[in-house]
Length: 153
Image 1 (cartoon, rainbow, N blue to C red):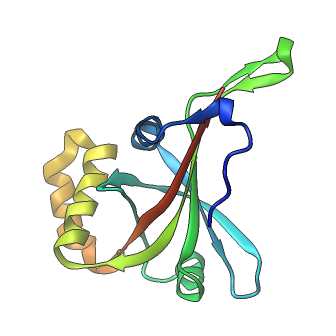
Image 2 (image 1 turned 45 degrees about the vertical axis):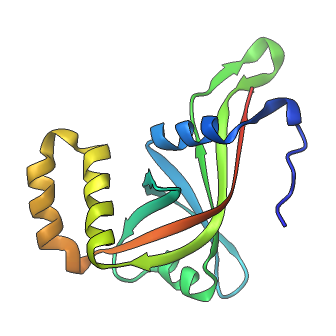
């Protein structure tokens, strides 16, 4: 169903890929528009329970695309170092494939709090208040991971 990595010598195991997912600040969500064009957009996210969560406004391009087709990919790039003498780069990256769905209720609140904890750990109480006040103006999307691939040099 999903392609095997061509460069097996650079393939990361699942645990290594997940560690990169946990550490990166943002990822690129890729969806397909109704007109068939790919759309990639950077999003802040959190990895929890074999899923990726990100928040969104209540309407917009990425949400329209997810309604059109909930099959998405998500990519993060970890540490990189250009190796000029080798005309190459030392890197680590992860690509995830899965299906995106909106979550609500307690799962939404827990995931929003996980985002606050990742990006603003010194402001947890303020974050809880923010979630309480802005929750209705925010959608929370979950990517159920079906396939994960990590690569590094």
